[in-house]
Image 1 (tube, rainbow over the protein chains, first blue to last red):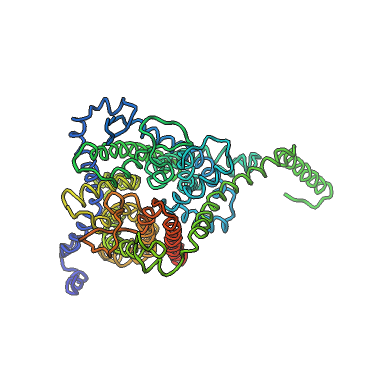
Image 2: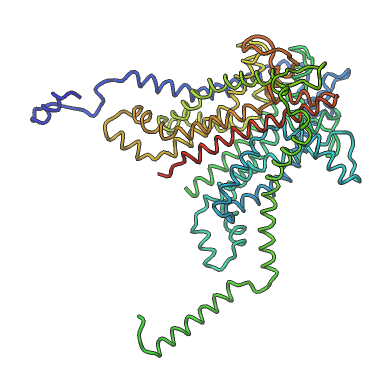
Length: 318
Length: 313
């Protein structure tokens, strides 16, 4: 806006002026367009994931019937008499996930209740970064620790249990549980802290003890956020690779429910198969993509459920 | 309503005493077991929290005890070797990790910050495509890392880009993997800047982009930087997707970004750990210790940054 227009406006000259910018500012439109592109790239990434996973599938399911894939109970691609039933790796995955959740749900929830309801501000401020550090420890480090120290140590403590071999699905699940405690604790803590003070104070006014307020008022009020924390934890456990690869090892090709033995999970199968010597485009190579698609779909469902629950607790108390 | 007559002061004293005894009978627990139960509950919570903290120290202690004989300069300067097992090291893998990190930073800084700025400041939430982008980023943050490895294998190693098993493929794969966390952290940082600052700027007649660039971004910068540093620390420790883009090969030479095999610190640790000779297992533990020390240093910088520049508006 030049000084002459200001003057003429002040001198009362009849001049129509709008609130629109005088220059079209193409440069800024370009910048905003670029910013939009950077955000839109994430959609491109998802599309690329879906393409890379699903593109080999038609060829794969022409060779292996989808019925066999979901009904056969033996998974032995690359063997002399290959069987392509996906259940053993799916069951192996869920044994790990269930063990991990048995460890992480109580420990994560109790930690969250303590952090949100009991801990003095100073303690909370120093513990949160420590939990973040645990979440950031590379899983290959946790896996080696569990394989070289934790599993032999547990066998030494409990020699009467039916340990067999050097691998253990149960210990793998325990180690995965350890690394998802911080995730569950921090999401559940956020949910409980967003419960309004008035609810707590109302309960105190009725004479409830602190423990009763925490367990009967705050936890139920934050339940959707807490469930979101559990689902996110489970989704992380489904996708965990290095710990499972190191500690649960490569299991038998048939169904196994024994936590003291080796089992193969979906992620460990993909990792070990992709690093082995296999011909590109062979049916064994395509199993990577078939198992990967299943893994992607399972975690996608878990994530959608978690996002739903998170949105619900935001809507209620914001 | 207080009065000075002795009768009414006596009456109010009686009322206070009565109220106090009622309150006491209501609030003080009648049986000692409830008291014990509450104390026990606090104890159980603290025990639960300490499991996580003990785990960190146990991992550090194990790596130190197991790998202590190999904490030397060879660890940093020597490459992998099956012949000189007692002096083999991680130099080649460290070089690979540094190249990967350089590529990751070059990609995630513009993409992560750009997407966060767009979503927080320019996106119209009522438009379907903006909601799609948001939902998509939330979902992408939960996709297992090994699936990103499959993406890298199908798109960067083969397929459209066909770079082969090179450091560039590993770098691009890891960058896409950590991108959602950078975007989410940067959005938090931008959202924490009060809108009054933006609005004050706009009221002075600047355009929205000028207000964002000169006011909002400088205020959000420490938060965005913290997000990027945490993403780098995650990128250093990530092994699973690199297994699929070829980092497991036992390379003994320094990698070239677009040519020839490469390795990375966590993948070489895994490689060593899987070998039968005891020297390699000790070397793997020493590598874990090296990696954890680097990561703790990086994380401390991030935590310090956040504490130093945390502002309450």
